[in-house]
Image (cartoon, rainbow, N blue to C red; front, side):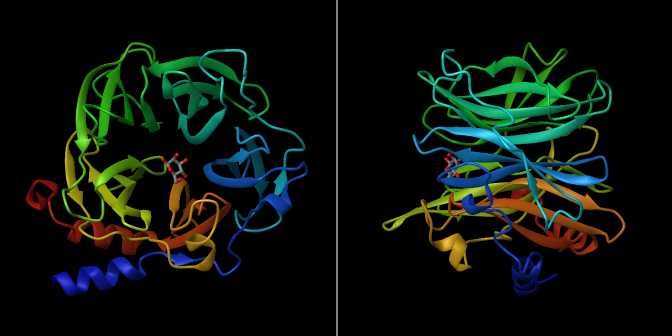
Length: 321
Ligand code: BMA
């Protein structure tokens, strides 16, 4: 495929749902400032979004919303589903930006979320079977860390965590491995920022990794700093299915960037921040849920076969630097 062809495809891969934004502060059963950056999963045949909800003090908690079709008629929990314990060091200033993955071996959902404390943002792990009761397993890796998600199974006996520590002032995506979800090692950079491209000075994992025949499809966000402020966009990468520390492909272009009014204007304008995905096998569609301008929840829809064709046509990642 030519460069023009891939750029054209990248622009058309995701289609914004015409009912966007799908969730706003007005939909909440209690007073809140903003609802954004939702984790997602399928639960009992419906879609569950675990949304970041910012209260009127500026602290965030996580609240679940459920919908049969993943687009309309959301049923929002009447009170916070997972609230910060403000008396602990780990959660002093709230909970943000969860990601969810189903761990088949444990028969449980694993939720990785950012808790905010004096040491800076840190990634913590909670597990649940029903999104009503949760076991909190604590911080995974010392701060500063964000944008984390587990892969759903072990590789050579070890769990893999994709996350975004700040190392030497640089914000690349890393992978770490663990035999028990508690002790983490073999830390290595996975997807780096690309000097002068749309995805520098920061990148971070977006939604949970999606298994496709070609490998693990990764949606990641890239931040560009401009004189008018940061622009948050999303691009794609592909990891090897059996050795996910190997990056096979990476999109040159972003596939979703702020264009619609609700993405350009909000508490933080020019932000699309995907944090959840649901694959609908019946229609062969990928629903990508994202925070728009740190204000509302929106969804963009792609045809899985088109995404697969596109990522296969992307350059091998080493060739991009
Ligand atoms: C990032 C995170 C997100 C937020 C985004 C845009 O650093 O903190 O929660 O949506 O900035 O403000």
